[in-house]
Image (cartoon, rainbow, N blue to C red; front, side, top):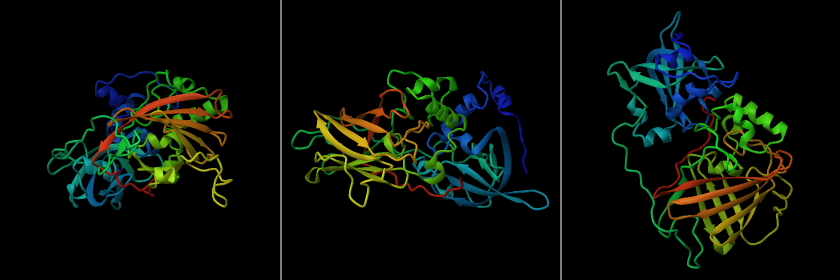
Length: 390
């Protein structure tokens, strides 16, 4: 049973919102901004799965809570004729909600809830849970924080170092932590100022040509992905790894495990399928392992590195084309080569600078820079990509 209340434009006007012209086919604009607070940590954009032009209100009885990642789903029975219908309400993932003090037990089975959100694009009985309210108490569920959130640790102090004076990319001895909270959601060439949301969606599609020096075909692909709200993202559809710079744009963070005795550094990726990559520091050429990746392009490429003062410089090559290397949907080919520069400014801050050289995709090399924050005293959240009602 669907009850449409108002159109997206009317909803904004009713809330005192200001409408602005949005290019045809690219309507996430201000309406999407209203949703970013609820979805900024999610794996897909709201418009990738839900029709933002079809608001929906449902009232029904809770029958089950699917407490999982990347999304928690509330299953509810909605009255209808001739029989009631089962609907799935999608809210943030278990890790995110757990950090805010929520649990599967926060919403009792049998409770009647009123849900406001948007209908699924594919016409299935799914709704985005922008607002979930228990009718018995008029209490909002799975929104904001439940109770007093724990104090968030903040790192401080100088850059930790190895006995030889080289900066540590990981924790000091006896401590733990990981790198998270990237300062930029998607890549933009240094010196270019454009507005985008927490997913890497541009506020104005006219800015697409400014993001990076793209070949005409590449800009066309990028614009198409943006217009489709990034719904063809292989990480969302097929759990493909976040290769290239994208691994440093993920909310679940990364860890560096340095092994100087073996001349290598492991990078452990908190999102995706808890993937890992190896960076070699023994001066080897870009030659893979026979029978392994010797002639097989990889999601994470092949990396060799050296130290230039306090900066860890990684030469990355041999990528495949089966992944998006940026949250915002910038394309690449197997010609991609990257130079990554990691500089630990202090205990709290890691500066990441990447230079992209892919002559089949871009007209010239270009560089993008952002920072990551050290989350002290914690391990990366345990997240596994899974088939979770795409």
